[in-house]
Image (cartoon, rainbow over all chains, first blue to last red; front, side):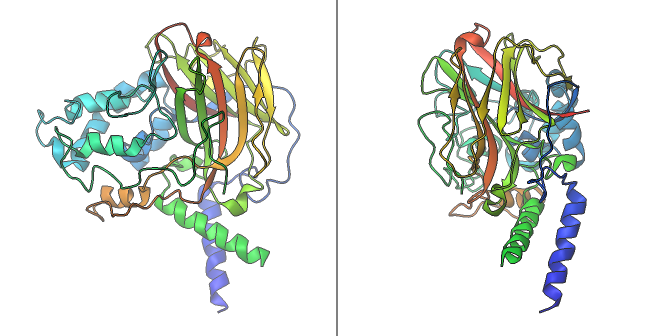
Length: 187
Length: 216
């Protein structure tokens, strides 16, 4: 019984040491410094366009570079390795001519995803994919990971690998609001 | 008892971090206050507006949510490309000062790319009180018609990332039914800003992305 807390402590120490928690993100957050003014330079730490591109298709030792590369350079820097990863993880892109539900080869899909931005329609429906419109925005309720899995694993007719082309999680654990800020209340 | 809860909570964070450290995705920003979790852009309840939402510091356990806060040395920037060259033509910046979240823009950035400065001379600048944990959401609407929110919310992301990571390394062959949302019961720090489309460049579409920048 006495060993358990020691293990917990060791794990927590390992976690804190490995994760570079700063004071503002850790247990000392109640101690708040007073910061005034808006001067200074700020260097990029992280970035995101479409959901989970870094999560799903960028290998661990390259995530840091992906997150700090400026957007206009992402395609040239990452297209080839994203294409290789698509071919590696999915059995639906064995041949150069194999395509997904959108008629994209692995190369064309990689070219799209490597330019990691959200395309946002200003004149109509905004959705990641609603069955009709594709990549015209991202709403809170869009099942974006199912869309990405479908394009990766669903094959040219969208019916292949039915237990890989969806994660069977279709909605959030709390309801969204129809009005600003639309977000669900916290647990 | 309180210590026990804290220990268990930290342990649960550790476990989740190990299985899901991609939502918190960069090795050097895991657990970091500049770590972006997700980005959303969609037509608002008023169809003349676009809503942008950025979530940060993901994997936030309810036990730790009371003390969670935005970093005063981190700018969260929404980047807007109006001419399809994937370079930001307009930006909206958010940074905390005390219990207020300040917003600047949309306005052309003074510096494009990795290193930025805050547009503190922007014609459009407003602030909103950061909603205290579990209070009724506080929002503000500016004279220009922008709406603002910042605070702890449920994490709106849903995905069985635990199984996906096993799939990637060959330790699973399929997703299980019923699905298991790795983010069930977890919170996140959210920034929301809604902007009249008329302030977004005048075209029919934009490219948008979010970035976080730490004081150098």
